[in-house]
Image (cartoon, rainbow, N blue to C red; front, side, top):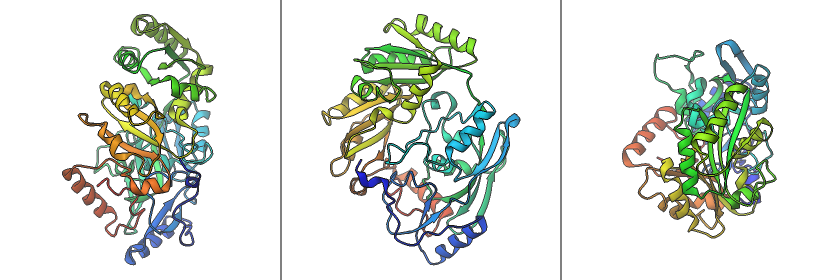
Length: 420
């Protein structure tokens, strides 16, 4: 990724800073009437994720911050969309709870410092970490949202209860919409108790195919695995100073969490009876386990290097090793690792003119997978198809949803071009 990616790309007019939802709604309604494009900005740490925007007026949403409601006994938290992630994490940790979907901190990957993102940004980009295999995606934890649509209409959607079956589940549409449907001002989330203990089963020296087989065996066992990753030697060695164990070979990792006695028991059973036949199994305790999985979550094995393109591919887990092998044929300097049992491939390769988007997607042939360009320089993102092209039926539905929320196309225009 080039150095210029850390700077905002859409500051072509004086930024608007609405003080509350009424001011934001009036601003958007006026922009809708004049078909004036707006660039929604929280902390600005994810502006380099997606297509670069055309000239647009920045709308800073920093006023929508702070925890508005937190009921630990009900497992519900409501906060302004611009609330920093560390503030939410600290409040939850104080009550022994967490966001179970484990949103990654992509700030360093996108040219920013750590712990600078907001909860709204994580949801708008649909980000979830290794625990997705057990806890689900970001949208599975979003209960409600306060929105301002592209016409300036204010909507309160969803509820503050975990089980709600009334009406359409509009908040879930916001996850992965990259701010192209509506501006979120408040979000309500399901939270869960944090694990008291974490154990990691570590296998060394497996190739990708055997590593995925071990991950699959662990995930299919009765021992509630909550993380499953395979990191080849090249990526593991590069990240050995970022909380990964020092190694001269590959690392295959399985995580179990829970009450201390339960976590220890399940880790031992996994090591002895499920994955021990693949390689000698080591068990890592809490101290090394927690930062290790933060590194997997935050794409630490691929950090560093200039003019690189970082891709996130989703494939059937059984296809992960095969697709990764095809991707390695693209460039001798490619680096990659597998997360979510082999179903997520993180790929880093020289950027080139267009992030090699055609070749990357060609490697998915014969699978139901898709690829998203997560990090690259502005010029490469202009030329590449950042998001997976949709088939005709899905693209038509996407356009209808967009037209319902933002008929003039003024919110983050062009950011998801090619996806619909």
